Image (cartoon, rainbow, N blue to C red; front, side, top):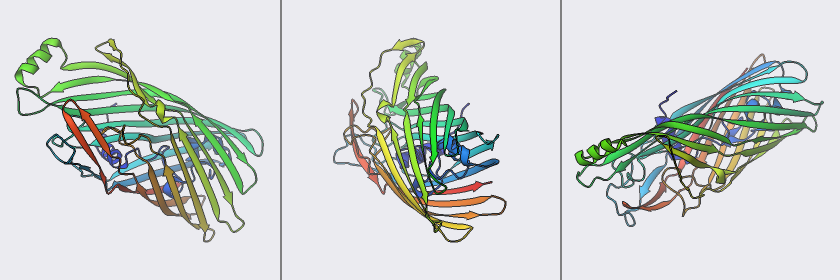
Length: 408
């Protein structure tokens, strides 16, 4: 299973982190993830909330994302020629699909296809940091069957099993002693990991409800090939004789555990308020158990990542029986300290604001549209390797997310 992740990795470069830490969202600024529980999207975020849904429901969502961020090399600190990277960023559309079916008064089943997270960068072949990275992507695609059980009128439990396809590609240049041109090293790895989600949902009344969902970590054994290319003749001959031009590789990638919780309250006027919180043990994000051509290689990677937490809040203004306007705001903590950040995963703290509208159609169908303005942070990097020093930060660290959702 091979995919072209070019557009997605360009987006991830601009956003710093994948489009969100949990798939799409029912409200602007990635709000209303858990407590609202009024469409099939709940099958992924908090499967216990499926107990609220009647009959069979399907939600189809598309997220259109455009990044305006560009990385600006600090020429006063950088010691390698090449200047700024290629900063063009094409828009990308990411689809999500959710399905829920009611079996009886107590049991529901669900299925979701999502892209729960992703990291990436795409800088081009000639910029100053080409020896650190030309491009990098690490993308997760999750197929998650789920089930919920209504214990009583107010309390429900749920469980999901995430089947996570993980794809990693990377490329960086190699300086050559006997050639003015650069060589390159490329990797292309993929694999599948499994995680489990446990969820609980409680309805305090017809107007107030809350839920919580814990998702275990997912270890995926990624397998593929590391390739050395465009070498000078002498280096190429040596690499060929040593059998290292194509190296069969296996590594373990860990997507850390997370907790997601949220609450919903509806006022007598029909307006409503939501609040959600997320915690991810991002300090456990790692690559381990490296094998090269079947031989174990002991590697020790420093723990540079911080645990992540996020909070968001949304408000819905009910205009009439069909139309509701919505606003929201979100904050995500800094995943890596400025002194530890590298060019592959340039995560920084983020905040977002957004607005949207929900319009009810006939026969239980509904259309939602949300527009979110995202500030991804300057994400400064100052990295020194054997080839030299490269430093800089983001200019215009902004992105727009447009979500269109159809539920029926």
